[in-house]
View 1 (cartoon, one colour):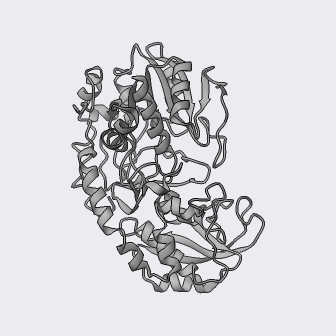
View 2 (view 1 turned 90 degrees about the vertical axis):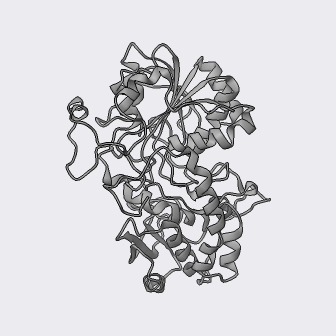
View 3 (view 1 turned 180 degrees about the vertical axis):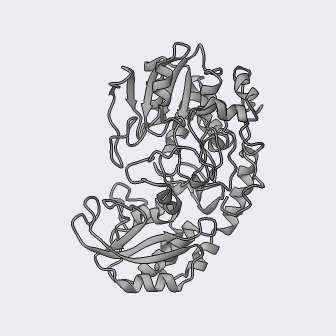
Length: 445
């Protein structure tokens, strides 16, 4: 099957502004003059796919009937939203908006959407797409009368963050309907390093549909290319007509704090880039019934604890000498979610070196030590009697759970996925868009 080019002829104006592959050259003086927003001297200037599309005067979208999949993160460097910009510009014909988990304007909590309705600011119909099946996506596209779908959502780099699966299902539906699919790329806030266990088909769910590793190390644009090359044709009968408007100035070893890309919290419990850094590991505690992952606190996924834990947990974790992290003894009372109103003892995860820090190895070590407590219990998934444990869906198989239950060490658990990680790392390479920059030699990507 012939591979489509990264940018179509209609995007020539975007390509003329500079290479679509990031890390080739810094932004020029002319680029800087184009923007009224100042760049911090200590951060690398990065232009997202949206920034580059706006710079091109919407070159690749003019004259098309457009549907947008986005949420509050779809903003330019001036915090202006993609949908608002499109709606105000007569050159762009936007027909509808599709909102993922938490909704288009971001008002819903975890596991919910905003419902289908009319957006107060623009008057556009916003379809509730959270949890939508591929058939439902096809129905929504037809009802909205769109011919081009634009995706602009910030991912955080973990397989079990649902936005990438919203992208996948909407791509399959677009392929079946013969629609064009355009991804406005954004940096991966935790860099380009792939790590962790592979998803197995038996544990596919809404927090992981296809075989990628737990920390995939790819941008949404790169993932879209991988999905289109490896998975979409098998489900849709053909690949989707995909275009990626790449970032410029980003390279895989950069993290959120290294660039000037605005941070808008991707979901209510992902408030800061620090949260994103730890999430691929501490997100696994959503699969533990006896321990809070920090929802209902000011530091979700950084504060981890439970009513039956004590100070011995923090002592054992610090004694393990895990790279790039220290643990602070912490006590907290969640205001919502698990153990709301109950005092919990545990730790605050304090990352001391982002590039040395390994979130999944750290999460495994935390689980291994927490399993010593008699109160420890995995969270049951009452909706799935065949695969009854939520941790299996988060980690991609029952291997981590059964190994820890059998007394395996952190090293044993980590060693178990080395071969599949190496295979995935090789498989993803043809779909990567960005090269490492000599300006950022660290190993965090």
